[in-house]
Length: 346
Image: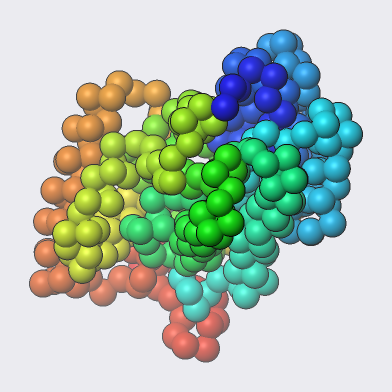
């Protein structure tokens, strides 16, 4: 499919991967409809796309409401007459031990990251089936096959998004809808504001696990999927390596990811409990990147990947043999099964 003059809908377009994708489509000559909750950043993204020569429209929407997502589709059709590409990129997250994270926060992640994608997929496919062509792109994550601790709702949601793509492709195959495509993108760790915006109940500041890649890398992959659709695409060498390892030694990968996340996903800087952007937009949400230095050279990233895996494996073995007395999130004690709040540093 040609990208130039295509009508493209992108959810989660106010920051991060969604905004990078909107700008990439604008640069490629597409018409873009941007959807997100935060109105001011969304309008700023619309203007940025228009400044790059695109016909752009922004729609403030919470994708956890089906009627709101349907309205995005309707406005896109009013503006451009068709929908050639729909990208589900809206995302929220919350970090914390399973017995500590509030159930309302877990439910909110599922509502946005799973049901939002279900609503978006249905709205897109209804139109694409009518016009007998189109590309639906859902953003999953490498955590769909390489889960990490203290991030349960997000991991569940991304595994669900991957499964959603598989079952939708099967139905399209059986219906012989050859020109309607469903693609799933699974990025490794990206340099986005997600780690600033996510809810946090760990007691420590969340940081991305290295290696970290620029979000523009995902945006390029998404644009290329419109030209050459594929079932699934992993973005980032670390993700491709993780997929191979998870197939060869799933138990070992599960253990070393537990140790690696515990060591590298949380800084020593304390953080108060907060909901982040779960229930309302976070201030300063206009950035594409999160300031995590995701634009380092590829050779540095690859070296970091190999080093991280080796170090994590050694750390996992050492921890298995001599387990520290600290709580589930290193350096912090947690309550017992009654779910009371955590105490200070151990």
